[in-house]
Length: 245
Image (tube, rainbow, N blue to C red; front, side):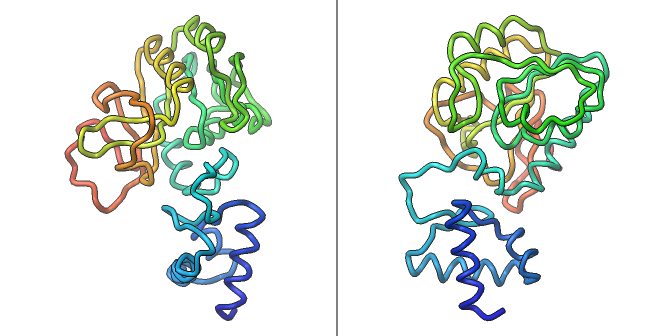
């Protein structure tokens, strides 16, 4: 496939989904990822798109990606992080699963276990097909952009249970002060309530969240039993509870 055809394919996919993933596009076109990256670099110089970690988005910085769009980013890395985190869960446990795309795949590894799962994430609920686990859904004010429930009702319901484990996500981590961030306050309140009512708390991220700040400070990495992340090149090993998968 010549360069002009590749560019047309990439722009068509970008207009349909709002985002393109380098690895998936390379597989679809049977090309090396480096070829797709070069195409994205050229299209960015032409002002046609904005490159991000793992892919590119429409060239509009004012538009935040939806949860559905974010699921295309680094999906395999996020799924491996989920798989490793789920090894901590055993029959009889009660767990909380946060909203967001990083925790999205956890249900794939937990559905066959005899556990109780509490979640405010509509993404997880919609992914369930056949499930041995008991699922408890949290109500409250629904945020369509984030596909999750928040607010006072959600906080009260989350706080009415005791969890053996809670699995949380974030929008980014500051590599200097080791603070995790969320994009806004209402999801932050639900996360903190889950942590306060759990014996063990875990943060799940992919490498694109490293050295990224958000609007609201969430928690220091020391507050988590473990931080699960896929391996990346510029990590110097200075975080004791960071587990690379």
